[in-house]
Image 1 (tube, rainbow, N blue to C red):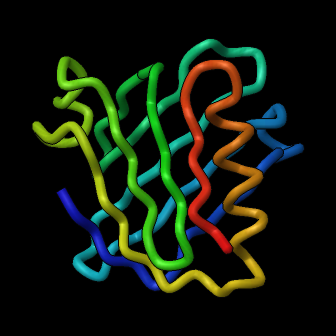
Image 2: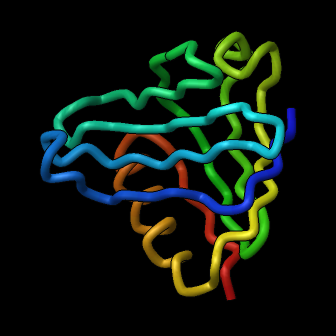
Length: 118
């Protein structure tokens, strides 16, 4: 599955939401992707077009123009039947550090983060 978005919206630690880490985007076709995790939880939540799923073992690979989310085949219902979601993005280079920190916070201890940045 693939989405294209102008930019990724990231918050590594939302004080107003009990320090939840959150990454989201809206595609050029109006689809919404949200991945979030509270620091005291052992799973993260992925919401695609309003359908939330709780997962662990997620892998995220971030580059300057792409975010690849990979999940277990048994969890494919979370991504409309696919075991991966490729998000092509135009996030400003200056904002990528915050996106990276957010992904690290979300995946710490329960998933894998791979950086393909510089």
